[in-house]
Amino acid sequence: MAAGDKMKHKAEGAKGKAKEKTGEVTGDDQLRDEGRADQASSGVKRAGDKVGDAAEDAKDSVKKAFDKDK
Image (cartoon, rainbow, N blue to C red; front, side, top):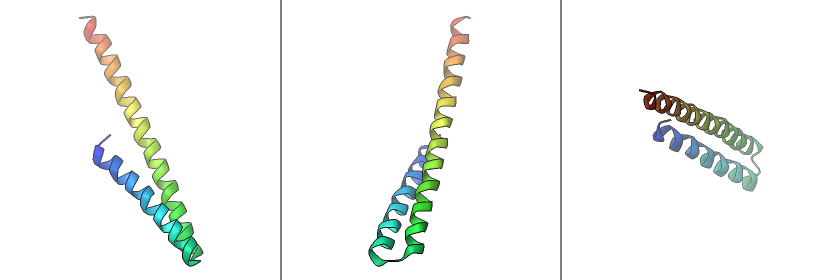
């Protein structure tokens, strides 16, 4: 996965956390809920990043195994 995407997804989670806390402090339930949604979205994207990294690692392992046989 691209490092830029990973950073973007992590920043989205941090932004969501800030929104949630601001909403809690100000009593703005909509802002709080938006923050929670942003964090959930970030979590899903970060999980996707991990799956992509695992797939890339698996591909590299298979390629190395076939290269050794040559």
